[in-house]
Length: 256
Length: 331
Image (cartoon, rainbow over all chains, first blue to last red):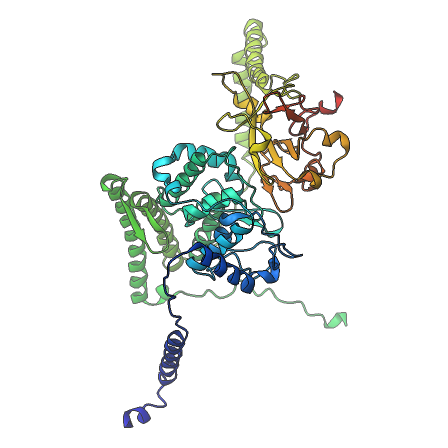
């Protein structure tokens, strides 16, 4: 105690006290806000539809209407299918946090069970694209990387960039990066055509071709930077930025 | 007031500021060491370059904090050479700033004009040389020299022939004829209207004979984008509407501005965006230009179905595809 009072005016006393207070507040908050994990239970279709309906009424009906008929700010969900729901809610895009020109991906609000229930409920009202099964998503076995590359360049690269890094559309809309996106979501996006993305029907882009595209995207994702620092893989833009700021700045700094 | 105007004396050159290395021998030694260290870093850079070129394998990938997993050989080759060159420069600049004498000296500029004697010598030698060559007398040499020089100057002009050949009618026509089937690109599968859902797009090329081959210059004119909308969403006059089929509309993919492939279709706004210069076309109004540098809407391909139910072209394009060119409006 005498130690504490003796050094109470030391110049390091205030920073140390601040660190201690931050640490204490942080740990208290994380302990207090920890959520319990929900119990796992059997998935039965009729209860799933009921659960899905409840979740929908609570979290989605304010924009999408009580009977999925849509409203001024949200489209109708009749016929969008389980795949759409799984994509939009599973990637966190729905429920919308910020209704601007494009809905962004964010941490999902609902867990897997709730997403599955929602999907079953929406699909039960009107048929639509199904969620792809794991067996149908075996891109390693059923896809061809080279063909996937050709298909990607013809159909996808103009919006999503030649290395699937994402690209700009008009008026603030954008095609997001495909790096780190699950194969299931890529497949669902191609089938359902979310937001600005067009639909790629199974007849014009067959399921095998879709798997080839996924395989190619995964190969690009796994590819290490072969030529040194990749700098975001968008080509001359980042390289020029590095040269003009860091490189020439360094030269000027030395020469002046 | 003018009598109080003082003539401001020329203050001369400001007093010379001596650097530490000029005044203090220890500071001088310190500066020398610093320059030596910079040059030594450059040598290390060269050694790193030689080491990574000779001994590192191309398959070695190492994780670095900001760069991620990168190819070690490429990274160290680049860094080694960068260090080698940069520190030579840095060392030289540091040497000049700290140690090289920086007193102001005045260097007198000498007269530009040559001496009179040298001038006379030059003129005399030139005249002698001309008399010796006697080009005026040797007319055979003069004429043959003139001919060879003239022909040599003509030969680059001949290379201008490679600016041609003129395209003639090639820009007016594409491979699309009446009854040409629309096939997927790649894959060459014919398309039925039921294959496309509302909101779907398809990249399309004209069908070719079995085992045939498409020239790249043909693909560059023939590429077509197929988009399906709801019939009610079109705002077209009846003539244009007759060129669509059950909500399916086909446009040339070649931008009317500079020829980039316009395939960025935004399903929500029904706009087609060209990625090169951002020309935006409204699909519901027959690719009318609503933004950007394009002067004309995209040419629309008239489509219908044949007896087997596959989509075919009703007729060739009714205007040349792609960017403008001089003779375009004179068809």
